Amino acid sequence: MTTDALPRRGPLAALRGLLDRPLASYYLLLSSSGLLLVIGLVMVFSATSVQSYAASGNAFFSVSRQAVFALLGLVAFWAFQRLPARTYRALGTPLLVVAIVLLVTLDLLGVVPGARLGPVHGDTTNNLWLYLGPIELQPSELAKLALALWGAGVLAAKGPAIGWWKELARPLFPVAALVFLLVGYNDFGTMVCLVILFAGLLWAAGVRLRVFAGLGAVALAAFALLITLPGFKYRVDRLTSFADAKHCDPQQACYQSLHGLYAIADGGWFGVGLGESRLKWGWLPNGHNDFIFAVIAEELGVVGCFVVLALLAVLAYTGLRIARRVDDPFRRLVAAAITIWLIGQATINIGGVVGLLPITGLPLPFISDGGSALVVTLAAVGLLASFARAEPDASRALHGRPPDRWVRLLWAPLPPLPRTRRKAERTTEGRR
Image 1 (tube, rainbow, N blue to C red):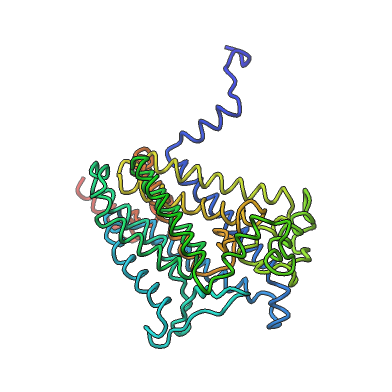
Image 2: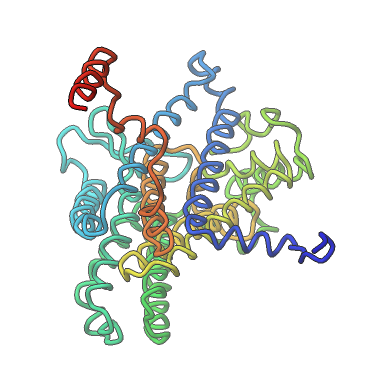
């Protein structure tokens, strides 16, 4: 048979062949999250180097701190990747209890001796951090992972009974509402992210549409109440400035959003160059955190933004692929909730930067500066990696794979010493 007679495989067939491999989900998850983490460290250094040098004389001050949190996050990733499924179920309730205690501590001053709230940022009073000595905590980030694990455990245990309101109302809805209120009082954006995560849990569990309709009405009423609370005027200002951008004061409510758009416009297709952003020098508030996508757009242009969006799309596809392919209902629910949480948070962040959504102050996963968010995000990705290894094809491939070369060298029996070998040879000849 000649080579012309052989069937030719197109790029789509080759891609399908790669995706059909047993460990495709695992490697896609590692590559997409790893590249996003590297891009985040590079962009945090670019966004903070000038101000860090002006403040402390060390341009690497902020990025070195972020690198430490990245290492802690990688340790959490490795640990969560190795835990069995029954441990994840057992962790749900303790993590949720710890998150609720920390959130109550955040809302009620003086509960924990030595604890204090974080500093005020800009014109907002939504202090989000607890300082327990040298340890800086953001309890709302822990609440995301805790709600995903605990809620998935409750829904998986109820099984088909989730079709009844009574089963959902005990204890899922009251506990989730408590977490939403504790988070939303100080951090409205994170509460929206938690609601998206919770909706993803219910969607993956197969809850009826009329339940979603009822919960949606309740959520809208709660949103309106939290936005109009006394002492939170900045929330109303953000919403009104987004709804009526033409008449918004460019020096007050619209300052951050306008300068974010200026940065995007300056970047063009290919950007002004890595590290060459000018608006990050005090003109763009929170350019290292919730508006870091504007710095990416200015320095790397549309191409850089497309790379970030493509990696997030790969992460979304991989997470939902893992949720579809695992057999355990608990793992399926957790994988869907984590994926929808990360992609929903990224969508809200990027939508606020480009002017399609109101600004909420949510960080961009993997990329924005922030220790608690990065550690919890990498721990959640470790969960997804564990579930990817638990796919039926992946599990069979891992169990049937021969040990690595260094493992064979480590555990192979050592050859006998030369003197012992000669003695054994003489003994054998004497027996003959």
